Length: 171
Image (cartoon, rainbow, N blue to C red; front, top):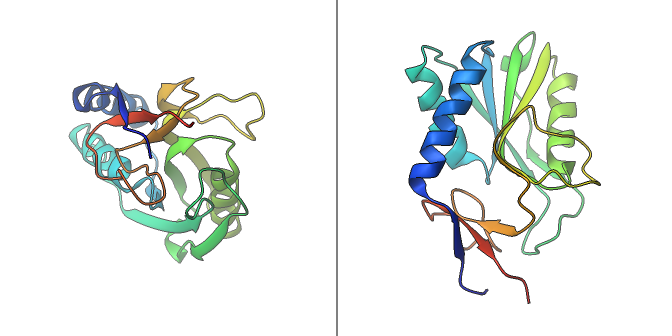
């Protein structure tokens, strides 16, 4: 892996997550569902930012896998699906990065099948690709085309714990 290059600092992320929480709080969901493993950092920060806005939510996680050890997504596998807690609820579905959207499409379908009343999406980064299957309802950052690491996102399991978001140049 090449050396990650800073794209968004810890402070920039905090400002954007706070702004996102303010927007989401104006029409609050009833349940926050994060997608493991890439969204766990963002889901925690967003949940705390929402609580500061007076919106305290129950939190659940789906565990989906599409990348494995590769940099390009494959079929999305559900390792842990939604619980009964989604039934009849307005769900905020949280992920790290929206690349093509296959993971979010699968997660949304699983939540609807589990009885969610509605599903709204929030991501740290929506790449806004022309071939994306959807656009996030809420995104902290948009239009980044690079491969990203840090803030929960990884490169074959590495760099997930970085407190900032960095780009990795692919040779």
